[in-house]
Every structure is written in C-alpha cells, then in structure tokens.
Image (cartoon, rainbow, N blue to C red; front, side, top):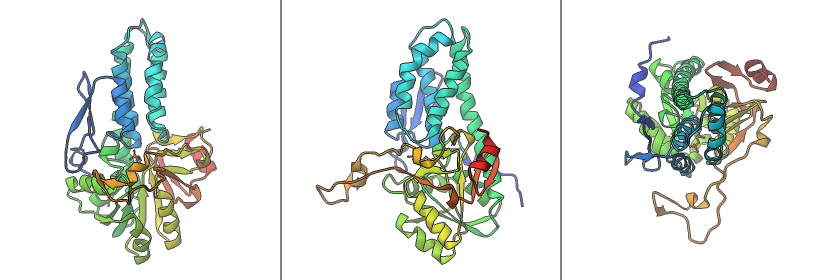
Length: 352
Ligand SMILES: CSC[C@H]1O[C@H](OP(=O)(O)O)[C@H](O)[C@@H]1O
C-alpha cells in the first residue's frame, strides 16, 4: 500500500521564513483571506508575534523562538557562548514567557542554551546553525510521523481532526495533518472531517485552507457536531496534534480535544495523537501539572471583528485541555508508535 508521497507538493505553505537578516512570519490571524508576512527584526517582536498567534502551533513557536534568539544575538557583544548566554538570558526569558502550554517553546530555547554553553568565539554561527537544524529536524520528523501514523489507518477510513496541525503549525507537512496527508496519498483515507475549532477557528480558517492547497477537499463541521458525526459511523479515527505529552502519556492539546476523546471512546472510534519528540515532556509527570493558557475572553465575543455575543457577558477562555492517556489509542512520534500509552510505555520510548 505504501506509495511514494510527493512531499514537496505539501510544503508550499511556509509560515516561517529566515531571510538572513530578519524573521518573516505568515500572519495566521489574517488567513485564509489575506496572505501577509510580518517582519520581525528583534527577539521581542518574535515574542509578541508568538503571544498574538501571528505564528502558532507548538513546533512552529519553538522554531520561531529559536530564530528569535538569533535576532537577539545581533544586539549583543560577547567573547564566547557562555558570555553570550548570560547576556541573552533576559531576551530568552521574554521569548519563553510568550505562551505557557506548548513545551516546544521551552524545549527550543533550552536547546539554544545548550549549544551556547560549549560555543567558542563563533557562537553566532553556532546559534544560526542550531535554529536551522531545529526547523530541518521538525520537517523530517513530520514526514516520518506521517508515514507511521498513516500505516495505522485501514483503507477506506474517515478521519476527523481538530485545530490546525499542518505546515502552518510546524516546519512543514504537519503532525496530525501530516498523517492525514500521507493517509490520503496512500489511499487509506476516503474522507477528512475538520472541526472548526472555536474560538480562534484554526480548523475552519487554517486546516481547510491548507488541505485545499493540497487538492484535498475536507468537510468542515461545527465542533458541536463531532459526537453526532462519530455516531453515524463515518469516522474511524480522530487524529490530533499535541502541545505537551507528559511522562504518563497524558496530552495537552487545543481546547475541545478532551471531549473528542471521550466521544471517540464511547463510539468505538480510534484516537491518535501525532507529535514530534520535541513535544514530549518527561519532566512533567501527568496532565494535572500542565499550565493551561487562558486567553482574552474577548476571543469568544466575535469573529473577524464582528461581534456575535450579546453585550456585557463574562467569558472563560482556556485554549487547551488535557486528554488522559487512558483515552488515547496511539501516540505517534518520529521515533515510533506507542499504542495504549501509559507511564511504562512512555519510559520505554523516551527514558526517564
Ligand atoms: C502541531 S501544532 C500543535 C498544537 O498547537 C495548536 O495550538 P495553537 O493553535 O493555540 O498554537 C493546537 O493545540 C495544535 O494541536
């Protein structure tokens, strides 16, 4: 069944462009109707772009932060990497504070600190090479995950996905959307359903747009329709991404993922999480310990600048939730597939 996937066909969308002098970010707040890049000339502009969701998606914000460190390095002088690390720390702290839930942000910054610690006088070049390596490795990981995840999907399947986990959220190809792209390319997936993913509409605005670039015609559903869809039997897998995978296999992901997992288990639909190993956080024992980002309640009051909620209403806007590992059938990373994830399986795959 394996066919060669035309990966380049899927990588036309590049949310992050390093020009050699600045970082250009595809403004995801304006998609799909406006394709516009924002130029960041310093690390604080990158931190602001991450917080504002100009760039978003767990792997993508890690990659953007790594380039943010490269930009911060332009503003300092240092004899070696250790001195540079000390001078860069305030900027790296501000990058790290941009968003709390996706571990990829802290993971990328920690990786930049590690190479600085042993870098000599050419520490600037070391930083730039490391930022590029983080992006290149993410793209390779996504392509590998795509093949591994697709292989789990029986031909003729319907798949439901949530939020956006494609090229817009990564260095390219995507995580869950990479599994879906590979599954469609291999003739395993007959129909793709995309949840709109309120309140920010990553599904309706970004995933639908991305799949249309590939010539894949998704079916958009309201988030509220997901359980009813699963009851019809048209979906065999729910395939989602992740922002942080804990040591026991609990997964933080876009708000709404948890209820998809509950409905999937009730209806006998399989539940797959696809994420690179940079999303695995073995230092966090379980999902109860994850900081769930809460964003401006105003994100719930309207869409595209048009108010839809009645005036003077309060709102609560957590933008992630935690799916317990017991509700997950498979976690797919570039290192392999963990079926029925738990602490033992995670330790075997990732060590302590
Ligand atoms: C491969 S992206 C992972 C993850 O990031 C998204 O969150 P956001 O759009 O708020 O950055 C969503 O949770 C995706 O599943």
